[in-house]
Every structure is written in C-alpha cells, then in structure tokens.
Image (cartoon, rainbow, N blue to C red; front, side):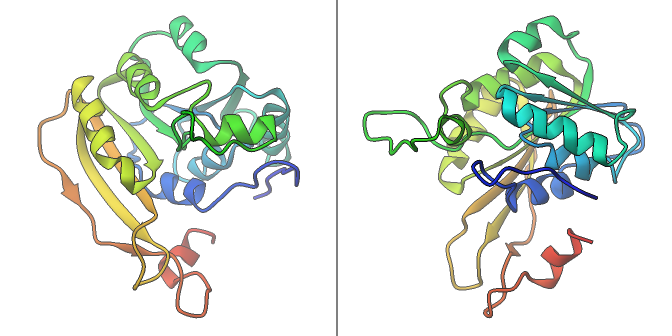
Length: 227
C-alpha cells in the first residue's frame, strides 16, 4: 500500500495507524466516514479490514489532492470516496443516520491567547481547533451515525474527561478506551476512545499499549499494524 505525502506538510503519524486498528469493525458495516482524513491513511488502512464504503472529508485542498492520489495509486476508487470541504457544512447535506462507523484524528489543541501557532496555515488547521473542535465532531457524529453506530477518536490523554463529558452530552456512550505509552517508564501520550450512539453504559478499558522498546524501535504489537 502506498501513500502520497508532501514534506512541507505533516506526514501521517502513528495516531493514524493506531485508530483504524482500534475501532470496532464488523461484517455488517456498510458505510464509514473519516472526518479530517488528511492524505487518507485511515481510509486506506480501513480498506484492508472491511469491504464497506468509506468516505473521507478533508477541508484543505492541497491535502485533499494528496488523498485523491493516495486512493488512486492503490486502485481503491471503487471503495474510498474523498470529498473536499468543511464537514460542518457537508454533514448538513448528508442523510441523517447514514453511517455505521465514524473515525477522526482531530486537531488536538484549543485556540487561546497562549496558543503556540505554527507559521504554516496547513499545520495551524491540522493542529489547532480553528475550523473544527471536539464538540463539533461529536455533534456531527450524533447526527450521522446510525443507532448503535460507533465513533472512534484518537486524541491526547489530557482531554479524556472532556471527551467523555461531550460524548455523554450528545448521547454517545463511551464503551472502549486504550492508553498508549511511548515507553514503559513514560506517561501516556495517546488516547484511543470509542463510543456508541445510544449505547448502554459500561466502559471497557483495554490493556496499555507501548509503542516503542527501549532501543527506540516499535514494539512487536505496533509492528504488526504495519504489515
């Protein structure tokens, strides 16, 4: 599998590999939406796990162009559709309750007077909640997910409480989470969390995932995700 990247932009990260390997995918799934798909790493990986139709939405045109090329070079045009636009506007045009699974690797940082903004407009939008914030994502997911549909998010552990509060506020019940640690003696730096629309209460916390061994190489578990 190939992916098109631009060295002036973010290359896809481990976050985008972990999320599609975490989110629940079953044989009954028909439609998947990836919000803020970038150059399409999550749709590409999901295509190896399901025959479902996958839509990726990307607001930045140059990144959208890379996503289109990534899909084309892997001959996945029949399964993956990439749309250029603002998901807040696009979601109003999409049919309510039309997706079984929604995934998102969102901007991690809130915008405030202390925000350390990158000079690159692309990186500003990718890293900070300028065009899309956490509650936007959850509200959109509430509208577009089928009953018992799944929302999977990769984020930062420090925003766990906020994510859970917003999910419950919008009738998405947190059902599964996993913390990812860079090494065994380090604090967690990645949060994987999944919620179910109108799901029953009950949160399953999976064992910790360590991304790197002491020598800096990926652990055996993480290496499996790249095969």
